[in-house]
Image 1 (cartoon, one colour):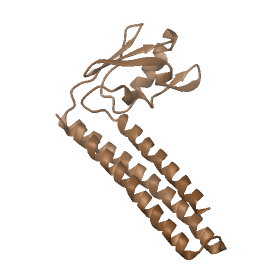
Image 2: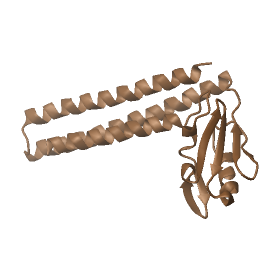
Image 3: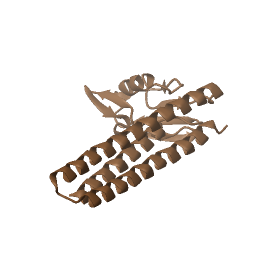
Image 4: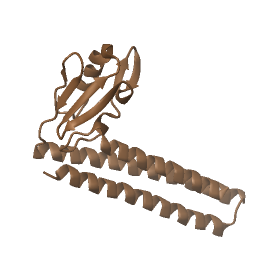
Length: 186
């Protein structure tokens, strides 16, 4: 039972870490990155659909993106979703076939804004990991209370859970440090 709780906690923490890294990818750095558009939702015939499912996203140059829809009738909906996208900082150009986005050079002020946004995303990731730890710890306390395991076993499991939590928080902090360096690089 203890092993199951720890295994489940580790799996959930891994997912929280991956989710945080995905959130980091959606923050623009100095280069154009198709990952920026992973979480953009397009109203496609009344159904919210992720942008990558509707089109090919390429970046032929360092600061430009080309969005090539599989269904040309979705061009207007895609353009509308891109215009509603916060933190894009560029105007999509629709030529009737594809959408081009030329991203301007980031100003120092904008870079600092993105660093702040990235720190918020990292904090959300840390909170998520700690929440998973709390839930697992409650499960361990329940086992201890019910007499399902000895105190020593539960204490050992709690120490393992703390180590697991620290490792995941450290990985989030490392990813944050890398993203900040990437953002502040001119």
